[in-house]
Image (cartoon, rainbow, N blue to C red; front, top):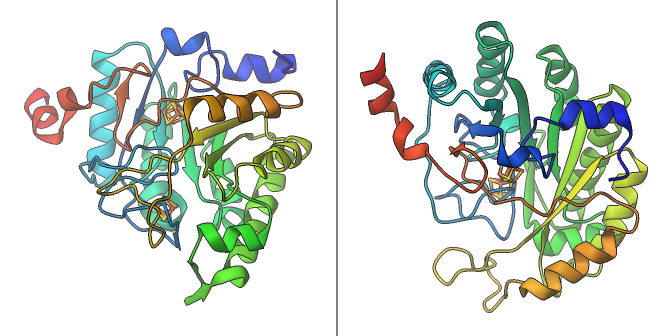
Length: 295
Ligand code: SF4
Ligand code: SF4
């Protein structure tokens, strides 16, 4: 690994950030954030945010109070649980009240659990202060492009200052906000991982450039994930026949990026309510009705 020691210390018991840790430490996500402020062509709002998660599974939406109850129940039953993330089902920072009241309660009640959040980045610059306040030391930004022309093919619109902004103009604002948010976070010493969805024919070649730029701006890990284009829900909205990358194409791109960037290769594209070690999902054991019974 080419990571500096202070970062290694921070990430060593985080299952997503350390290849070794993911065998021993567990994470959970709580689905408290239903709304989103952009539209990705690969998203189907009926399911979890495809920022990280596989399309096709609907999470049980929780109130912040229910989320805290759930975290406490899981922490009591899974001692390896070190990390709590908010990843959806929409964009956590487009639901600031729900997201931040969850973080506020958790930082008081379960101070040993590390908190992290993933976002499309549109509302990131205005959220950095608040994120720092709640001691969030890891943020994941999904950055699929740094070029507004490519962006317009991925994002049909964004919702910005109470208006819907379409096409290249919207994509340009999103890209600027993502880059600004990334810089603000790394300046404050908050770790940033960048997720990118590899979309063949749209941004595949371009992701090497993205990797180079985000590394330069201080992101510590790049996670290139395959577009999951499934017949019923994963089709690239409006673009029939958009395919997913072949495993070999994904690996070649990850190899090409890895020359100057640490690449994450064990991401499991977990659901917005995943519980347990990566690769195992114990979410079914901790549904709200079961947690209420445990109380
Ligand atoms: Fe969907 Fe996530 Fe994109 Fe929002 S950011 S449109 S929830 S994939
Ligand atoms: Fe970690 Fe990837 Fe799962 Fe997020 S989706 S919790 S980064 S393995």
